[in-house]
Image (cartoon, rainbow, N blue to C red):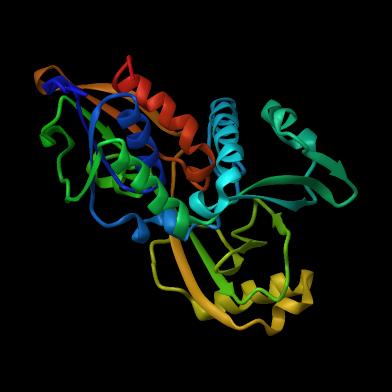
Length: 312
C-alpha cells in the first residue's frame, strides 16, 4: 500500500492501550510508529491481573460501551488462546449484585446472580503472551515500535499524534488530574485452582482476588490512592496471601514465584479527545483508564483511531 506524508501516525506509549490503538490504525491503512519509553513487558499493562471487568474507571455510560466492544474482541481471540493469551474462565465476583451495576451488565453473556454474588465466564488475559502478540500483529500490519523518550507532544514529528502514555500523561500533557492507584500482587505456584474470584470493597484500599494464569496463580491486591512506590512491601504481600488463603486454604502453602507492583493511571474520567497541534496537525488523547485499560482497550482504540483518522 502506498502511503502519503499525511498518513503517518505516531502513537506515544506502548502499553496495552497504545499497542491496541496502533494495531487498529495500521490495519486501517495508516503508517504507524509506536514511540515508547520502555518495552511493553515493562509497562503497567504487564503487571495487570487482566480479568475483563470495568474496575476503577469512569464515566460508566461510556465505559460500558467500550468494555462491551472489547469483550466481543476478547471472546473471538480466546479461540486462539495459546497465540493471543486470552482464555475464557469461569469465576465469581463475591457479594456483588446486578442492581449495583450499569446497563452494560445486562449485555454480558452468561452473567448471573446467586447467593454468593455474580458468576460469569469472562476473558482472562495472560499479558506475558498478549502484549508480544499485539506487537507482532502491529509489525505484520506494517507498523514499528521504537524506544523513544518524549518530553513534548507538540514536538512529535507526525501529522497525527496519539497520546497513550497512561500515568506519564501527568507530566507530559501535563495533566495533574492523572494520579496513581498503586496495586500490589503476589504470584504463587497454582495449587490446582481453575476458577477466578474477586471480593472488592470499593471503600477500602485492599481487596481479595485470585486469577489462574499459565505462569502461576495471581493473588491480589491493593488500591492505594496517590502511592508512587514501585517496590513491593513484604508485609502487604503477606496480607494478600493471607486474605486469599482465607478463601482457599490451599493457597497458604503455595510457593511464591514473584511480587509485582503497578501504578494504575486513574482519572476522574478517561480522556479521549481530539485537539489541534501547530501547523494543522492533530493530537488525540487516549489515557486515564484506571484499573481497566485491558477491559476497554479495543473500544477506546476504535474511538481513538476514528478521531485520529476519520477514515481509519
